[in-house]
Image (cartoon, rainbow, N blue to C red; front, side, top):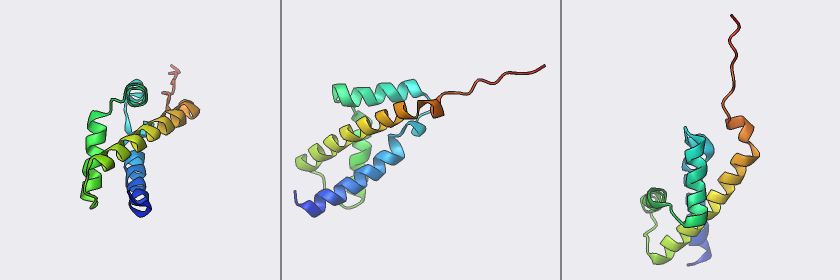
Length: 102
């Protein structure tokens, strides 16, 4: 894969991951953490990988085994990034406790 194609692919995957894999994309933080850990530890990314590859094809890059492997590895790296970001900013995602004053 040439450098130009790899850079284009990286841009597409990063944008897709930012829009689909960040903690704020999930309504349940436990599901988010489990999903990111499954991607990192078990290589389970099923629908996420398929959706990202659909985006890659939509933006004009024909997929093949080399593209598939590259996107797979990029998503795995992005899962590590987004999980680390979540733990760094966890307090921003934890629900606020509201006390009623009656």
